[in-house]
Image (cartoon, rainbow over all chains, first blue to last red; front, side, top):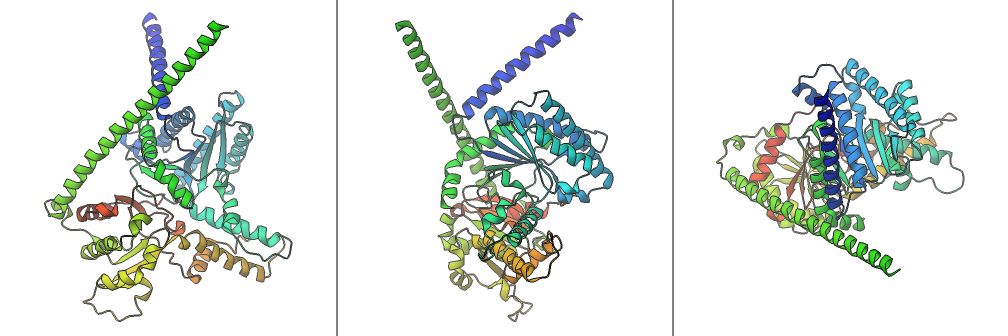
Amino acid sequence: MNTQEEVGEFTQIFNALMSLMRKFIFKVLCAGPIPNHVSFIMDGNRRFAKKHNLTGLDAGHRAGFISVTYVLQYCKEIGIPYVTLYAFGVDNFKRQPEEVECVMDLMLEKVEYTINQAVSGNLKGVRVYFVGDLNSLNERLRVAAQRLMEVTEENKDLMVVVCVAYSTSHEIVHAVRESCVRKCDGTGDDPVVLQVSDVEECMYTSVVPDPDLVIRTGGGDRLSNFMTWQTSRSLLHSTATLWPELGLWHLVWAILKFQRMHDYLQKKKKLD
Amino acid sequence: MDLNQSMRLLSSWIAQIGVLGLDLLWRFIHLVVSLCYIVSGIIEAVESYAISLGLNKKYSSINIEKLRCLAVVVDIEEARDVSKVIELLQWLRTIGVKQVGLFDSQGLLKKSKDLILGTVPGSVLSEEIGEKDSSPDQNPLALEFISSSDNKEAVMKAANILLQDHLKSSRPENDKGENFFTETHLNEALRVVGENVHAPDLLLVYGPIRSHLGFPAWRLRYTEIVHMGSLNYMRYGSLLKAIHKFTGVHQNYGT
């Protein structure tokens, strides 16, 4: 009993020290420019499960969710106002039906868990927003996502945009369609011509500014149909680390890279 | 009151010293990061020269057939030096690449199109392939010149074509356009406005950072994006290495 108590106390002290060290690291990091919006392409969950011989179709994705909670905590502590997570792409629906169903069930479980956390006041300033073709999700998940968006609507510290049933090509087509239908329904004698701003207003991700930094895990060098429209002036950072293994130092390294290139990125934005 | 004022002044000084200390520490960290980049740059340069000299057998043969279309993104400052772009194209031709899209955001390379086509042997505009006679002995290098006007502006032109067609069609009330505005329709409309909709397999970025700098979004979905550094310091070995690495990539396209 005493040994267990001692271990428990030691763990608490260790966690407190780690937390202090982390806050100090972030204080130093914040001496320089911090990205306003960071997007994550969360690749590598299935390979993580295979690497660690985890059983269950959703084992890797469960580990991935733990990583999500840590990364969001770090982003909030650093003071990044917007984070986008590429959770599930339109092309992912082509996976085995059992796997898709498993992932959808896991998402529902985690959304309901997050709703409980939000209602209990544990989400501390985090606003969650779901974007994508939400009509292609099952009704339970869609309703839960809507509920989570409602209960976190007033939170202002960190906006987390979760891209589900999302792809750039789908987003562009949807935005073109929506803006065209709006123009057709409009009144007045003005010529009916679409502008870039009309289409961008209708994009799924219009709720957030363009990303400054895109971090892809899993070693891939591609955007995989994610925000190619919005990332003209983004630093694309790729790491071979699998998503469930992404830690504090990976995030710090990516932000240091962003800080090195910040002046160049600002110059490019001004040229636009 | 004096004591309170002194305390406030002292806290202010401590805070300022703290901020200065954090700033110095931040600069020191960035100095260390820059040193890491210098060392890694030296290692890459040595590796690249070894590859160029044929010392690394791994790069002696490349399955170039897998690379159907390559795109090169050049930062606008670097695109002003067309001679470097010409040299790069000559290297690509030597490697066996058959189709190259050249992109810079402001269309500087488009303006130098005639110079590039006149200087790089065997190069033709990609839209002219098939129009000209090409004997089996010739290996034309098909070039495409792309700029930001082929990105969002082109999608707007295509969207306006679809909009005008939709307005002219007889459509039911409360029509949401789901059958009219699809990926296929947008692809077709982009072709009508003269845009190439084919996605490059590999995108090489020559510039200070790894960013696609506004390459047409519609074409970038599963393209591998590799940062090659500055065009002024480009190396043949690095180019070979990037293409070789691409030929080993296996994509599952989300499945």
